[in-house]
Image 1 (cartoon, rainbow, N blue to C red):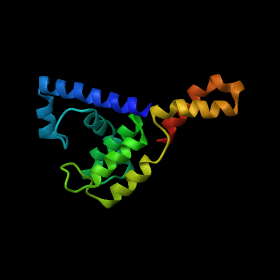
Image 2: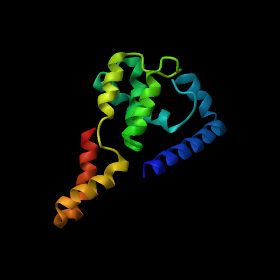
Image 3: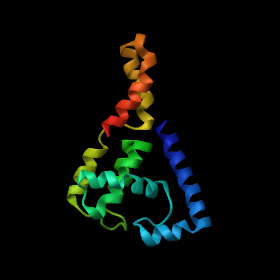
Image 4: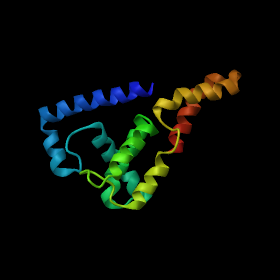
Length: 148
């Protein structure tokens, strides 16, 4: 299941890159953001940036931290930790500049609230109370959204 989500994200990034080339969005993203092209990571970084600001993330690290949270939600915490390892490297163009951000990202990524693990949660909790199994999909989605 995780492999399918990662492949889907790669396919989606390919389509967004093509759209970015066709509409010159890649040039705009390269000029105005920390990202070099139009991608799922750039979209998620922009969407979750206000939440990172509210959490107290240092200003230069707001968009990469938003990217990590979005990727963790869309794919899994494993993909998020792989990206965190890349963002910790100061040799990369886009990297986390503050140790505080790295610590916050480490704790932010350790959780089980993402779309890929909803089925695992339904199966695990459903086996504990098979009589109420029909109620669990709604409850698991609410629980996953509250965990963030």
